[in-house]
Amino acid sequence: MMRIDPEPLLTAGQIAARVSELAAEIRRDLADDRPVVLGVLKGAAFFTADLARALGMDAEVEFIRARSYSGTESGGRVEVFGLDRLSLAGRTVLLVEDIVDTGTTLAALLAGLHAAGAATVRVCALLDKPSRRKTPVTPDYAGFVVENRFVVGYGLDYEERFRTLPEIHVLA
Ligand code: IMP
Image (cartoon, rainbow, N blue to C red; front, side, top):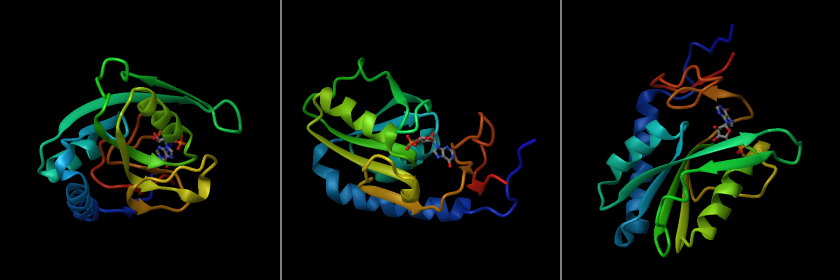
């Protein structure tokens, strides 16, 4: 039976405040580009919805799905769904991720977006766990840097549980 630390690591208020700050930064950088805000399901679903609203700019919202098979040690294989039905050639894409951990997923997504012909790709991750990196990728915008601990809530799950928590907790 998996449990969470009762005390949140990040409260809903802290997350909301940081989302506003990230949105302001992104708005300054991408205002002229009518970006495609591209959320990665399922973990970034709630973050994408909140960030897209906070942007307050002319933007489109799309979602793709990434699934990783953590088979090998040097980063598992990543399968990306839904990219083929989007027209991203020449577009500015703001890729929205829940967390960058080993970086394997983000590296695969970036390769996919470049193959799809995106003109500019910026990455916004709610959480960044740089201590776990195996592939050298860095989000352009990161909400919070977290220690090497497994976190859940605000979209992040452990075996499909805890996604709907409004705040972020460490798995006990
Ligand atoms: P990466 O490919 O190792 O960077 O892993 C990225 C994906 O693994 C994220 O998009 C999450 O879905 C999942 N993940 C990594 N760390 C955590 C965590 O602490 N909590 C929940 N999901 C995580």
